[in-house]
Image (cartoon, rainbow, N blue to C red; front, side, top):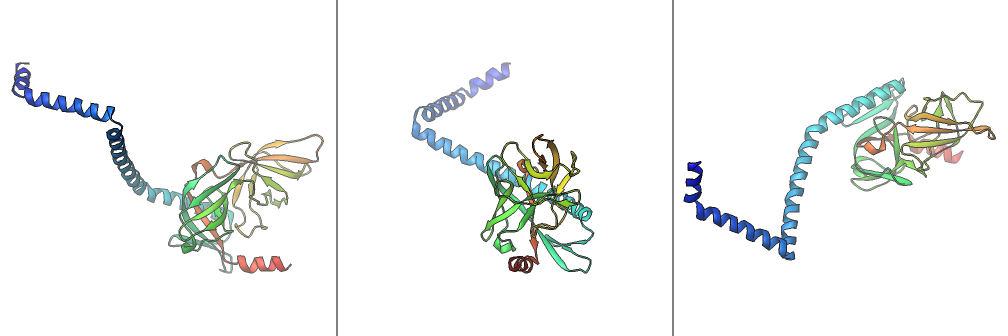
Length: 273
C-alpha cells in the first residue's frame, strides 16, 4: 500500500495530466457535432477493417473444407441418381452417358447475394460470362434444385430462385412426370404447391419430387423436394400437394451451374417440331 501511495505521489502530475486530457477529449467529442462525426467515421472505418479482416481469415480457413464437403455431397447425389460416370475436371465436373458422350458440365459458384422472403426471389453468384455461364442454365445446390440463370455479366450472374412465381419445373414423382402446376405462393418458407395430380395416383407423404426427362436445363433425378402435406378436397378430383424444397434457401452459400452441352441442338429440334 505504501508503494502504491509513493508511486502516485511520484507520478501525480503525469496521472493528473492524463485524467484531464481524457476528460477534455470526452467533452470535445461529446459536445461538438463535427468532432463527434469525425470520431464516429474513424472508429467505423477501423471496426469495418477489423471485421473484414476477421471474416476474410475465417472464410479462407473454412473455404477448403466447405468446398470439399459440397463436392462430396454433389458427387454422392449424382452417383446415386445416375448410372453414368462422373468426372471432375479441375473446378468443373462432367456427366457422360454410357457411350462416353459429353452431356453436362457443372461449374461451382459462390452465392454473394440472396433473398428468400419475397414473392419473386433471386440470388447472385460470383461466376458469369467469363466462366461460360449464360441465361437459361440450371443451378443446383448440394441438396437439390436451386434455380435458373436469368442474366449474366462478365463475372456475376443473377439466378431466379425456385422460390419465385415465374419458376416452372415439371415434377417427377414415383417414376412419373406430371405436367401440371408447381408454384411458389409465398405462403410458407421453403414450401411449394403442386396442383392437378389426380386422386387416382399413388401419392404418399415423404415421396421425393425430382426432375424428369422433360427438362433440358437439369439432369434427370435432381431432387426438388419431398411431399410434406396432402390436401384432399372433397369436391375436387385432384390433390393439392405441399412440397418442402430440398434446398434450404436461407442457408444457400455454394451452388453448381449446370451446362447442357446439347442444349442448342435439342432446343432447335423442339422449336421445329
